[in-house]
Length: 173
Length: 173
DNA sequence: CCTGAACCGGACTGAAGAGTCCGCTTACGT
DNA sequence: ACGTAAGCGGACTCTTCAGTCCGGTTCAGG
Figure (tube, rainbow over the protein chains, first blue to last red):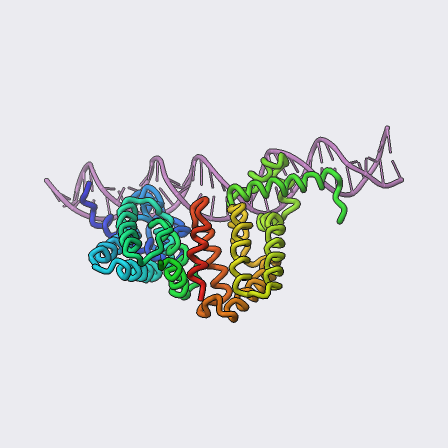
């Protein structure tokens, strides 16, 4: 069962590519039929491989989330917690906004497996920065995530860097 | 035609009340059937009076928008543009968040008649505050609106004041 | 090759929601 | 009090989309 037939694997990849394209373009609102059409396969083929639409979305953003985790781990190794936090925030933003549709998918999958781990890492980064006096103490780590995320989500195309600057400045101690 | 029959007027009011309740509870996603059920009238009655769901939503938030316009006009009369802006932001936030569902409706109706006028007023308030050196100059008035709005929208229940503080601090010059 | 298991596509189901229509009811002017 | 126009409600249509199912097809091992 772990081994897929050659044609199945081919289709699976086409579906994943198509899903990435579709979700990047339309966010989590892209329909399964859109994905199937883009992939050139039947709607049923998509649903068989990914019993739920969220499964498909999660498969698409898995790589994104993994990259963010890597960034977070790197940030935790810095010896300047303040700088590490702000750099990390900008890195993650850059990654997220390289595909805003996918960013919306990440938001949509708030509490999937990898996301929880990522949340834990981010919380540590924020706590360290707060402890070092670089980030104001009257916010929780989760607030930082939500604030940054909301700035990115609400910014008009191409303007997100300025929005991020405002929020990050507001977060400084 | 301008005069409604007594029962029609009664129903119209019940529909508006019900719609306010429903949209306040569920944001713009509340269905027309929800509203009709709450009002104790048929689905058709709602649709006849408000040919489009957006018409209904707009009727519900009209009062809200008017109140915000009043606040904006008051802010424009202050002789301290900086303080006027920050006070105005907090007032509007307080009003918006007294019914978060309605706030989401306001966002949903981005470009309805009254909203444009409100945007104009807000833009003036922000410009004045920037000119007075109270608000950073590297943002546009519309950015301020979006940033504040996004902070309010993304905050978990009851936490929005802290989120607003962060964004407003980030907006200071 | 040839066969059966894996796989495919698309027809189908079911839910949900917006907006329409028409036969019945009710208000209200005369 | 009565006739009629305004109004009512809910059944109906139309659309969209997620998820299921099965008859036909294709792969891959023997």
